[in-house]
Image (cartoon, rainbow, N blue to C red; front, side, top):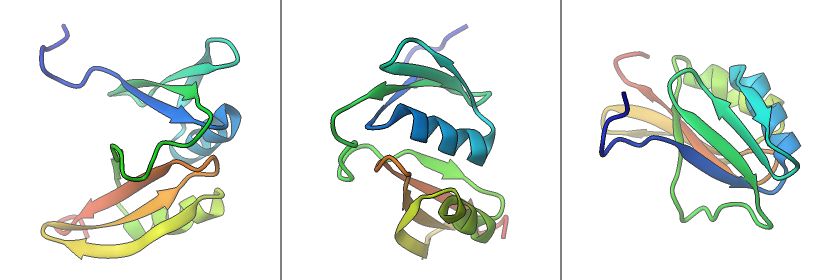
Amino acid sequence: MREEGRIDYIEIPVTDLVKTREFFSALYGWEFQEWGPDYFSFSDGRTDGGLRRADEPAPSSGVLLVFYSNDLERDFERVKELGATIGQDIFDFPGGRRFHFIDPAGTEFAMWASVEEQ
């Protein structure tokens, strides 16, 4: 049953659906459903979402999706190997560490790890 007030779906505007699908398929093993040339849906096993074609990447000053990592240094290298660029190197903050990356289609994301996990 869906709960009122909880985030139910995440939709990400991207300039290149195929590049973004390939990136997240390789990074996390996500599977996608194509709904025509302008929309792909996905589920990461916990959250459902979609990629919708956009003329420009989401602005870096907008909402930031942050992924959790069990090994931040491994994933820092992995996103670069998969074609992302680093927007902000690994830095400490109270309770953890994180970095920002821009996927191959130009959308910014972040990844973090708890200090307890390191």
